[in-house]
Amino acid sequence: MEFVVKSGAAEKQKTACLIIGAHKKSLLPSATAIDSITEGYLADVLKRGDLNFKPGHSLMLLHSHHAPFERLLLLAMGDNNKPLTEAEFNQLTTNLASQLRSVNAREVTIAIEEIAVEGKSLHWVTRHVVEAIEYAFYQFDQFKNDTGTSALSKISLKKVILLADRKNAEAVKAGLVQGQAIGNGRNVARTLGNLPGNICHPTYLADEAKALAKKHAKLTTRVLNEKQMSDLGMSSLLSVSAGSEQEARLICMEFKNGKRSARPLVLLGKGITFDTGGISLKPGAAMDEMKFDMCGAASVFGVMNTIIELDLPINVIGMVAAAENMPGGQATRPGDIVTSMSGKTIEILNTDAEGRLVLCDALTYAERYKPEAVIDIATLTGACVVALGHHTTGLLSNHQPLAEELLSASREAMDRAWQLPMGEEYTRQLDSNFADMANIGGPAAGTITAACFLAKFAEAYPWAHLDIAGTAWKSGKEKGATGRPVPMLVQYLLNKI
Image (cartoon, rainbow, N blue to C red; front, side):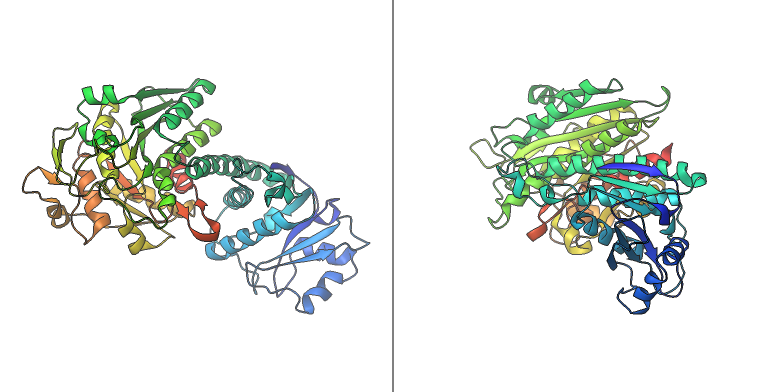
């Protein structure tokens, strides 16, 4: 999608579709001007009650012979002349993106300044409008022979013009740049998540990381193979890939664009490219969705693409612990004991609790970067879905200031997270009769005990864990990766600059 910022009066725009806001009690400036040149037509339409003013509704009007634009789309802005709440704005952007997919026009013009949100800047509004449009226009169709029948192929729209006064043009342009970069990065994550396991395996992810580094001088990619990981003592990570013909990979993408003296921020993604559960085999129903078990890794790729596009002056290490969890003659058995890179021993009571087994060795490896902080992102526990549903990401941390930074970023990005507690009372559930710890803590507080397990390997630095099991993908008719939490993580990095 092409986006352009333009200045000028809304009523003078020669465009296929002009989009403005509409309040119930009084006309906004652009609506007043349009009503004047159309001899009261707009006021008459609104008085008839054709538009439901609840945000999330809209009304398409056809051409009036006095107006230069061909169509007029009215976005409901509420009953009063008050700024929208974030929830109302979210409904408005969702409706707007849906309308743009169906409008029969090659370009539209949005009076972006008239979309006001309580406590938010024009930059913020622009960014989120652009993000919503980029999200809505994504389509994963590379495995369909007849792409001409896809929903996206039938869409006419190619260009979105954001209309703003000259004094506000720079703010709109800045919001546009961020919105596009975040939208692009989020769609990178969605594509990797949507790819099938027979294509997107650990080596594929490693090759993608190498290819990204070849395009950008400030990015360096290092990939550890199984021999190298074995030499480092990563028996926990390697226990997950033992039953698969696909070798595991530890991928490290090093983006060095900040001060040399600045310690890097490490983003670590769980990259289980397909999760059968191993010997602790999952039920067959919906097992195809276990290709999404690498969405944490996909989000790291998405963030790296975004910060490269924005050329952020920051040092970031994007790590991916990639493996395929399969049953087989060499697969790890329940009851096996492995020694992690840290030297701590783990009794594997359930081979389907594999994400923490690959992450724990990667967390130990991350120490060599002397990081300012480490954030791991993982589709880790079904318990998180039970606790928070599919709306909110679970957040746990050993460092409250880091947790607060992420929570703040999640609110600003409208990519919500909620902090869950940690404590010794939960850690005790991981006690083992035979090893330093077990890899599961029983049915109670599964999300928390999983984080407590990881915390044992993240004692050398501030660390946070994002459990995206409920937010990384959608099921049913809208099945597909969401690209979350790319917006939250990018906002966190933006706030660090």
